[in-house]
Length: 418
Image (cartoon, rainbow, N blue to C red; front, side):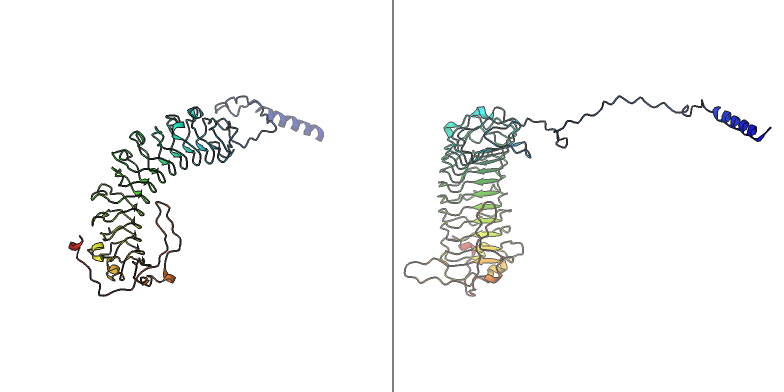
């Protein structure tokens, strides 16, 4: 057999050896692969932005207003000389209608506005007799309603029980009716400043069981408002005509942190009137006080400027010396003080940083009162020159304080208070 024949035989033999495994099933020991469902081809449409998530709300917006694409729940209708309220889409949660010429609030505009959480109708011409009854009770999620700087003579009612903050300042409201605040169990802040309220009797305010801040400044009150809720923390009664505070008025208000009753006609307060465990700021400036009172350990800022004090009895303010008194600032300018503050004050109030003595009042025929050198000296004063009266933040008035000491000042005993 020649070489060529031998090679041919070997080739045929090798091929047959491979072909004997042709029908071998390598997957016999495993489950078959599940059939994949049919996937239709994906078609992309030109002009469609596939990166923008699908919004489940309608993009409808009142044509008089502006609804920014970045905030689909907000509708801006402010400063547009509107005289009526446009219809509000159901998706809107924040509605801004301030600085317009709106007089009436029609309930038809709020038929679909069931998602509202905030309404701002300030700086309009709203009149009480042109607000449909219950218009502010249609939204079960309403948290804030701003109606300041209008012509309202009454508090609109009813208001949704979900409301937490109500702003009614700078109107013409002259009284609070029994039904005005009914059902407002979630209100934490009520602003009635710059109105014409002369009296608040009964338990109309006590129903606000979660109220923390009450502003009734710049009204015509001649007595303290009755039955304040125990939850109250900040009380603003500046610029009224209040002449007397009942002896036990604050006894049921243990959570008070700031009291502002400046610019009234108060001439006397009981010795322990302000002995409250959490009180940090007390402003009694611009009154007619002549006798000092006990200062609670928690108090940090005390304003007694523009009163009728002729002396300051530190023993009455602080009958027991300890390190727990937190008083840091005391303002006494524009009184009738004839001598400096006793150095005993620094022992009673170890954290004192500034006592503003300033210039004192003088009667006809008397010379100008001596200006006591300030403590601390101006270059070391921690405070600036701003007078920040925004409530409930602390004052940051011009501090200058204290006075040189009169070692011979005679401190009266507490028993001689009255």
